[in-house]
Amino acid sequence: MSSQIPFLELLKRRTVLFDGAMGTSLITAGLSAGESPEGWNLSNGTVVSEVHKAYVEAGADVIQTNTLGGTQLKLKASGLGDHVKKINAQAVRLARQFCPPDKYVAGDIGPTGQFLPPVGTCTPEEMEKNFREQAEILAGEGVDLFVVETMYDLQEIALAVRAVRDISNLPIVATVTFDRKPKGFFTIMGNSVADCARELAAAGADALGSNCGLVSADMADLAPLWRRSTELPILMQPNRGQPEMIDGKQNYQQQPEPFAEDMVRIVKAGADAVGGCCGTTPEFIALIHKRLTEEGLMIRKV
Image (cartoon, rainbow, N blue to C red; front, side):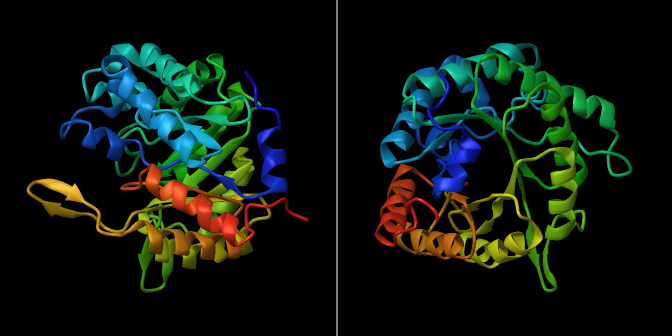
């Protein structure tokens, strides 16, 4: 069930629209605090597939599997470490269920929740083994590409990219999470955009960018830095503002309209693909699609 146009070729032809948050929709559907979203692939698969369906109907070109925390290291913390294969395999099937042949299913790989020395005790070998295991399952189920995302540590995301590249020739999109500091944008480990662009390209990534952490206005300022730092395609997926705790629950106040306007700015700044992260919903993706179309930014590139 491969897509009609190779993903990297599509990026050359027009702006590509990714989906938005999965966890936000699952929380609305009843996911409790501390519960593993990935566990819902087995216990509430219909809900997960309906979220994918809603993003397809909103105009998303790429649907990311519900496997952000799908490594054994991450699942073990939720008591699901023995179900890595079932959870990841089912995630691909759920994404495929409502994904047309001309759309793409991306195998989503996120952080392990562990830290490498000297901050933590997880070894590079153990971390890479976890990423490779997850990637092999996702590839075996027939994903069209990989998205390695929400990584704060350049060492960890580089390990993940290399692990995926070791077992697959599929496209790899690697997105780093940055903080905005007085002197610019940096990871929590102090890496700059240029550092990340250089290291991840060398590790084997086919496209680069950022997701999570930053709001859409900040991402609009970050996008030009990525464009100056790499010739590879760029993906940007900001959060829906900063969440506020109301009655013990996270609430995002940013509305779809200003978010979509910032996404127009991001594409004009050189991004090849955009989507949403925490707090975003199909409504956001639908409006982004509408605004990019109105601005002529979804058309074939020259």
